[in-house]
Length: 195
Image (cartoon, rainbow, N blue to C red):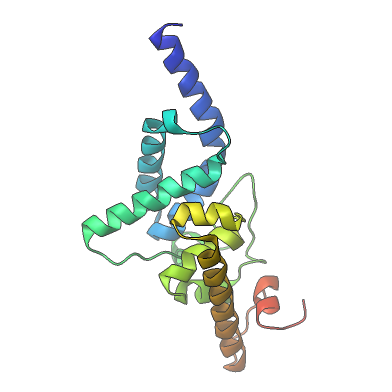
């Protein structure tokens, strides 16, 4: 097999596996970067790095988790070099969340599930909990996949997720007691209201 045909097969395989997850990668990049321009740059750099390292991709690896791990590494490297604090969370409502979270053709995530209260509560979480909550509850990844992405033991993922969810519940209860009410099903469930 010639080098060009082998490279073409590798490119085709990469496109088939990796591009199927571009919506999830973009959604998490948008949460991490906070605006569309930076998210697009982050996705571009993530896919460039993924393509460069695709020869090391193992078939039994879950491609989505692998890509999100590269996204996280890329984000952390950019943040560490720029000297700014990492802000991971939902973008502000005015930027892209008018009536829906970022568009995703494969997995519609509606404002009914994530209302303004839940978005505010997630954004208020300390970063070490916020990323875990986003990966578990928005991207629906397993503990093992999350542990691989963030580079910590599964027990730490479980602990941070539990703490993050408790903090969200506390913030939602505080908002309810202060008269600020959300209507999303997840918001009500976490705050202890009937769904």
